[in-house]
Image (cartoon, rainbow, N blue to C red; front, side, top):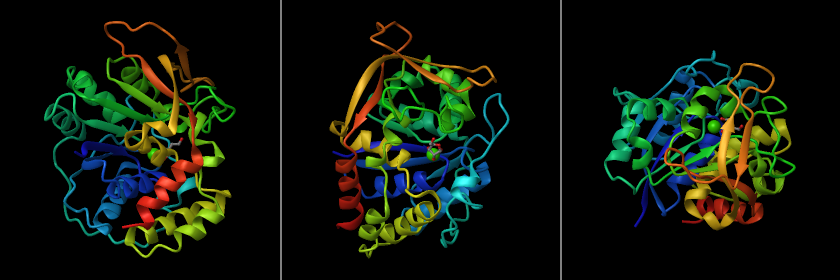
Length: 311
Ligand code: RIB
Ligand code: CA
């Protein structure tokens, strides 16, 4: 039985690759996509989510636009990496004439409340929408089967260093106040941070791109355009968001450390820095987080390739 999944995204090249992987994975049913400002402004990330879904025959999946800025800090994009349209300039038309009128954070709550304990939310952008959903619907954290977050850098591997600053990962840095709200909830939380997603063994290189080029499906061709854009400018294509989604597909790909997680919300050089207090005891109001401390990168890449190139 496929698990119902909602994706909260800021497409973004790797967010788009996560959408492709979600649509090609039978373990999950992508039921909802919500968008947040992050890699680009909200209008751009929303347009990109709609374009990718519609291009891949998934126009039936509802899209709702969420937060245009962090809870408290000013918005700061990442177009320098993802290109002027935040999607590597892919030539994919915008077909959908409307998106959901209801607020993204309310739709996220409705998603969880429709089947308490059964559904997974995967957040691959700043956590603004998730925090708002938790603030507006205090029962939501305990309704989710799991919240999987792409974010943070915990120093658990040599790759666990910041990419926005020396300390902080982009999603968490963008909205540390939202991250604080989420980290201090009782949601069952799995965090896939730079400790594993910046491991080159789990990123696409030119050899992987050549393999993707053998694909004939729309998914494969779109993945080629996205990966090519990244590799042609950044040597390889990091797969931060597809790796986070993979935690919902095959948890055995990862090793985890557990404990409470903390985040610096001060707007100084430590902003967005994340810490794992490994082995901390469970408390009534906070779940013990699972933080990825290892990944089988080659096996993850084989999984991605098998989903996109076969079938
Ligand atoms: O730090 C990497 C994360 O920030 C990824 O989710 C990327 O898409 C950006 O949102
Ligand atoms: Ca992202």
